[in-house]
Length: 489
Image (cartoon, rainbow, N blue to C red; front, side, top):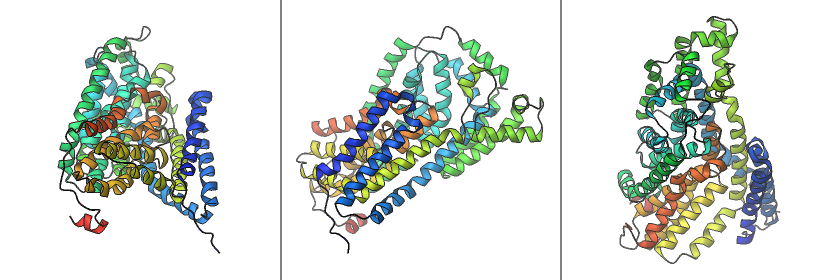
């Protein structure tokens, strides 16, 4: 006979979170750069084991826990596919000269005095046009990282600027999946949601630009050993650089604008990058293949290695700027996502997340408190369920009736979900977003986190507006509506 299942207490629900935080803290303190190579993954598995033991003590069976794990892992498959395709794309775009060309031309116009705010603006525009922060970081972001290194900036501050701009564009783009998702979950029109979100998002990006302008003026110095001219010359020594190379990224942007799914876009973009490498970089491919000249077999070997590994030019400086680790470079991140999904699945199966959020709702008394609780829950789900979609969907469902009872318009909820759910996902090292961007840029999440100003100012701005009563749209208070009735409104 099955044991009676007991609901977990708040204390029990917080134990796994505390265990994970302590273990991750130890990893960062004691292991440094090794955290993504396996330490964080093991910490997630240990925390999952602790969670499972508490759930079983409360009456759950191993079958219940395994079902929860499988359910969350299934939901993570699209993110893993995108991540692997990003690895392939970055490899062929490096080999073909697309990203080196972006760096080469970018060095003509970008200067230390305004590099960081310009990086925010460029990333924001690309992300706004495509609706994808992931694609922006994997393409233009990688190029901006190379430019910033040449101009003397550290990787963490460059990554923070790239991510700040990319997530601004992702939030306000009508093409973004999270923007559409937040509007749908809250039950508001997409463009109403975007317009209302601008009240908090525009001040946030304005503050972000001011901070990066100050950092750019005070911190931008050309590296003494490598000048801009030296870097451009080094690029042209190894790559054929021409505006023709930009046909591939333009084709990728066009596919995104016409709403092709991300995985096919990245796959086609990768293949086009491989073709462009053969057409535009025959000498480089001949050199890397060992044949001396371009041959069919050599081209196949080099392009394949670019897709799954790291073709090296032999020049340490060039390799540090332009080589990509391909699909193989994404495997640590994939492993991290899988273990994070396991932890989220066990937390969900044991009803620990539900217990924490229920306790939060009971303590809400004011509009500021409700928005704060919603934002906190989004961060909680980003930290435990490790997925930004769940960090939008579940808090949206949990708090929807509370917003209606207090007479708050649905766009207040949708704005909070995006300000906290979308923006903070990239700040969690084991979240799909944080793990992906760290893997693509090869900059640890905890390293760029202090500089991702837009991402942690966003929820704070939303909470500030709520407590001050600024731009809080109200409707006649309603009772809690059944879910089917709410969908029909």
